[in-house]
Amino acid sequence: MNKSLLIADATVEVKSPNQVFFCPEESQFYAQCLEKMVFSQGPTPEPIIEFGAGDGSPVIQALLSSSFQGLVQGYELNPDAHQLAQRRIEQYGLTPYYQVKNACFFDHTPATARYLIANPPYLPAPDNQLYMPSLHGGNDGAAITNQLLAHGCEQVMVMISAYSNPVDTVNYAIQLGYEVVDFMVTPLKFGYYSCEPKVRDSIARLKRQRQAFFSERIYFLAGVLFRQKSTSTTCLSEEFLKVMTAL
Ligand SMILES: C[S@@+](CC[C@H](N)C(=O)[O-])C[C@H]1O[C@@H](n2cnc3c(N)ncnc32)[C@H](O)[C@@H]1O
Image 1 (spheres, rainbow, N blue to C red):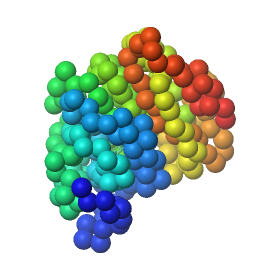
Image 2 (tube, protein in one colour; image 1 turned 180 degrees about the horizontal axis):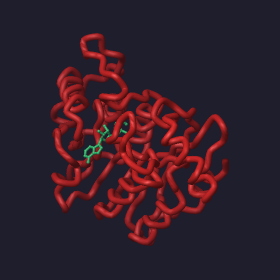
Image 3 (cartoon, helix red, strand yellow; image 1 turned 135 degrees about the horizontal axis):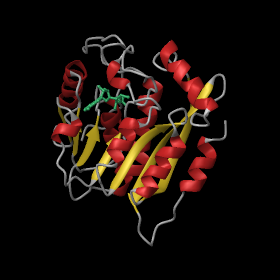
């Protein structure tokens, strides 16, 4: 596998942040979470499925930084993002390890999939009339995350924002039989998408309802590894919520 680091690619056409998700800090953190918590476990017996591959850069970066030899099957709704992902995967010679379909995850994933990864849409807003409608996560931001947890995979590594009702999400996961077995947290500044007035208003409303946690300038973003409960693992759900509700 080509081990060179993923760097800005001058041959790839630049897209506006309203066309293709663009938040390098967040995508890089998602890549680190994949490398440290998912790919470090070694190859899985079945493909890992990915909701919302975007331009493909997080999985590509994590593959290049690890010795993972399994297959990631991504799904991306947005044709522009899918095209970028496709081109990058070919450029890095990663086709045997990463494939992305231009399709809705929920319509096309096999019901038997066991391993799921996602940096899902988590913007809370009353409707999806946003800079990027496909980043809408329902009224509290957690709707897609909860739908992904309900998909029934054995293991799910999903990015969770502290302003998108993390407590109810973890409690929902526990109800579904999951436990938190690992997590990584980073502080992020509010960016282009989260500063959109409609989103800021929703986040402020959620804070009053104790469903969003943030300070004036930062919020926490976590990569959370959920696994179906077994007797042999240490459950970190409480520790995780302590960190996510600290601001
Ligand atoms: C927050 S972005 C993350 C992109 C990329 N994984 C990253 O971290 O840079 C979420 C992505 O999910 C895609 N998406 C939204 N709904 C989808 C669906 N139903 N099926 C597949 N992709 C979807 C969006 O188009 C967007 O590219």
